Image (cartoon, one colour):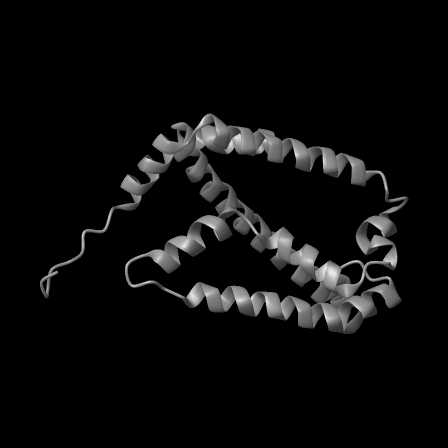
Length: 186
């Protein structure tokens, strides 16, 4: 390639259209089987908690690495699988997200090692309850409120990103994709 000439990089729209064209019945089968499997598994495991304490504290029997793994798995979303590779493989390749992801995972294990035993010992249900015990009920209410606002905004972004992926695969508009995701999620 001559100096000063840009490489022919396909647009995101072109790449997504190609994915939609190549989406087959086998791809749909994998999605349906996955959704059915996770639904059945959730139903089988749902009845094992005898109380709210068991639900939130896992009977205080889970080792902290299992709790950390669960938290990390819960934080994975469509954004993780769609946005991260797009950032890394885009022209110029931005590896910043890799550092963030690895740091987040490491932080979960450090926090799990330090806090899960304390949660079990004191029968604390959340970080906000812990902050309330340490810093007072006002701090607990403020941090809980901030978490709820952040969670709502983050979930909105995640649903939108998943809806855009579904839009590409199915050809539906974004609003319909959001409704489909909402119905499947319920």
